Structure formats: structure tokens, C-alpha cells
Length: 182
Image 1 (cartoon, rainbow, N blue to C red):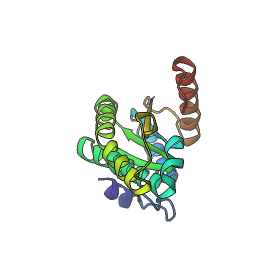
Image 2: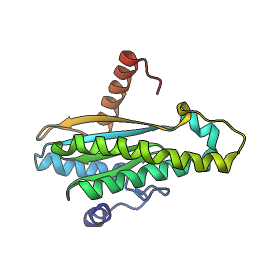
Image 3: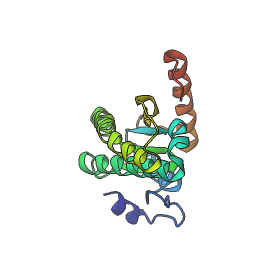
């Protein structure tokens, strides 16, 4: 579904992330403009993979495997449970955006957290064995996924810059309310 959507609009060369193969900002901007013109309501789900704590422990190749794992997980959720107009982009590093219809927000988020939590531990265990058998790990060093939801009403003007600003506000609010370090 994602690849057919990319082909249908003629994905711009260089807008595909080399690690994950997912489209990037240009594809996102085009799709957002299309939805605004069609006056569709939808939701933007910004998925942030907090890598700082484990990037040092696993090195760049281990961190890349975790990003690749996350991209495949999200792409499979969109493919299996999404509709034709739903899509996923890889913005940069550890940031992904899924654009889906509002009625599927809860299911998407619940499945993402459930599958991520259940599947990340075996991946981290593999990384641990590759890095060193003598290192002791605890739950705090496992990758953490954060999900931010932005609802867009029919015809509402939205672009990547607006999304980024709203996500920063949500991050700031979650830190101040919950004392979370992201």
C-alpha cells in the first residue's frame, strides 16, 4: 500500500530514506496538500523513538537496527490495519509520521505500543549479545517510543513546520506535566 501510493504520485528522487526505504518530507507535504484540497479530516501521528540512552550502548549500527525495526513495525501496522489513504513517512533519524483517518487512531496507537513493547526486548537482547556479554542492562535502557497525535479538521492548513511546532509543544507539555525526559 505504501509503495503503490509512492508510485502513484511519482515520489521525488532523494525523498526516500536510505535506511528504511520510506518516503520523507516531500511526499508528506504533497499528501497533506492533497487532503487539504479534498477537505478531508484526518489525524497525524508523530512517532518519536527516543534513542539517546541506548545509542551510546549499542553504537550506530545497533541504533540503526532499532530504527529499521521501528519502521517495519509501523509500516506493517499501517498496511495491515490501515486503509488505502493511510500512509507512513520517515522524517529523519528516529522520527516517523503516520497519516490516518481519525477513527483508527486508538487502534493504531494501541497496536504500536503493544507490538513495540513485546518485540523490542528480543531485539535489544540481540544487540546486547553483539555488543558485550558482560554488560548488565535494565529496563530503563530499552528504547522508548513516544506518540503524539494531531487532529486535522476538513480544510485545515497543515504542513511539516506546523506539525513540528505542535509536536514540540506537546513534548514540552508532557515534560512539564509528567517530568518526562525525552
